[in-house]
Image (cartoon, rainbow, N blue to C red; front, side):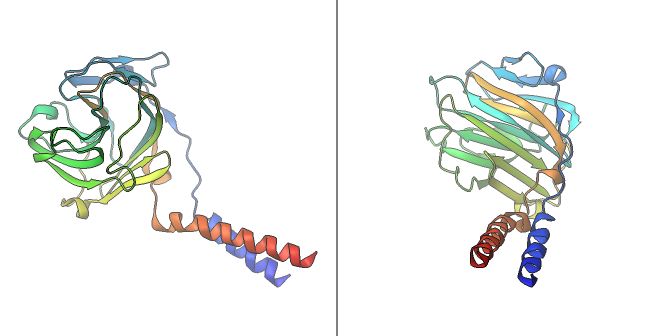
Length: 249
């Protein structure tokens, strides 16, 4: 009996590390704005948008939706096989910053194939001025690359679940539930991440669909060290419990 109680206590400890999820809110994209060379068409239901032009950098954002202390989730997919360039997101974005010499926002972009100094894979960059979005140089300062997707491109017609977490001290990006980027303000070289909007980003890539977009509190999505270690501990406790049951039989 004592062994069962000890295992129950362990299970209870690990389960308590998972906070209760607040109810996500579907994001209405019908009032969002676009900048740059893009054709952003909001889809039926207003929680999805499709960008159809292969052109210069473009963003689709809502300045009234504060990114700070929030998380945005949804699905991203490229619905063509005709190109291999950039898809992604902006965080802390202010209207007019895309081509501004005084820009100050965060860019998460993902390129399918390496090409003319543009690396393949998922990356986080700090955009601070006159931009070279293609090479991640100059005022587009690359900060980090994805843990498993840093040199892996997206696939044609594949759907990827994404979660973006943004607080004054932490920026995280999850793809299909895997933590790809987790950068603190200090690691990014700033005192804190500034407020601004969430947005979607395309560069030289057509037929990109962002769908099922929802918003929730950052604390309900952010991944911590204790949470990532709780899963194997939970599995270990279950294995021990089943082992005790076999011995009892």
